[in-house]
Length: 210
Image 1 (tube, rainbow, N blue to C red):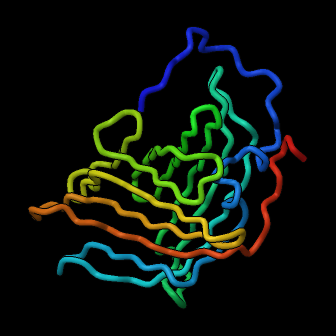
Image 2: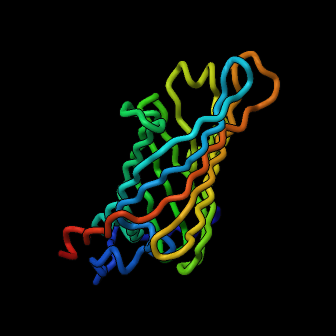
Image 3: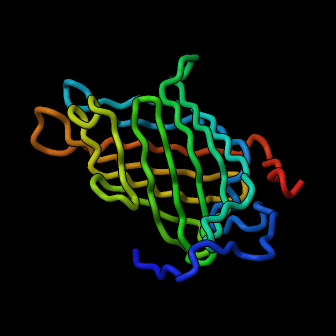
């Protein structure tokens, strides 16, 4: 996405509003603690693909405003913990940030998983949007995908897409599509994860706002 980079890349904006919860744009209603009881994972296996139900919690905590010189970002630090129904051990664990840049209407999602993979996805939305999409793809340095040697060779991630739909003050859902080229297969595999979450706790304001 094209953007104008100012000549002065060092001076930070003045009079920054420190109230993150008041400046999150389309991320506003994601702040807090959430639980999902009926997620569905369509994953690759030796037979082709399988489906697994899952339960999860996602914590999205407001952080203090962040600047890169003149760039101003508001965000949520998140931790997603996923288990199979009735089990304790993590089926999936993910950490990162959801970020909103008010000046450009840009959304960012950073994610890292303990399988040696990190992703930066980017999208655009209005401040009042209730549905938005972010994407990442292999080979770019702006919204890219980085994997460890094994994953990069055996399960090469080509693309990542997430669509978030906000369905009220206390409910939202996501639909993820991770496109993978699997060693020994000719066609890419679409690894899909879908879930609907409900709020179980309100967010705590960021430290500066307190």
